[in-house]
Amino acid sequence: MIAKLPRFITVGANKHKRRPGTIVATEFLIVNKYGNCQSPSNWSKRRYKPFMEQMSDYYAEKGIIIPVLTPHCLRHTRASIWLNEGRSPTAIAAQMGWSDLDMLSRVYGHRDIKQLRELLGM
Image (cartoon, rainbow, N blue to C red):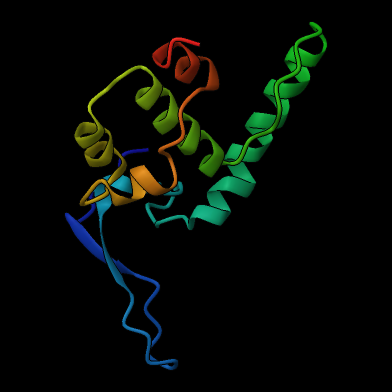
């Protein structure tokens, strides 16, 4: 569904708890059939997890084991694959929404063990 949204909106605000919320770009939001924003946990529970379970079951019948991964695991995998392919760390950080390379080097900076052995001539 395509919904007309402003470029930025505030999410998570609660005036009773005096929580101001966070301003987010709407290009990264998933909306429901009424055009309202879905929370990441709602989308994950209603759409993503059933899809992953269906895919896992489908491939299990063919003897291929595909684990049910969380969206965070997929994000981590994507960053790791790009890094192991030798993609630009700056480009990876930008694509993942990080302002610098700190997160990439701390969390996603490990490399494939086979690739490390090749680089070290082992």
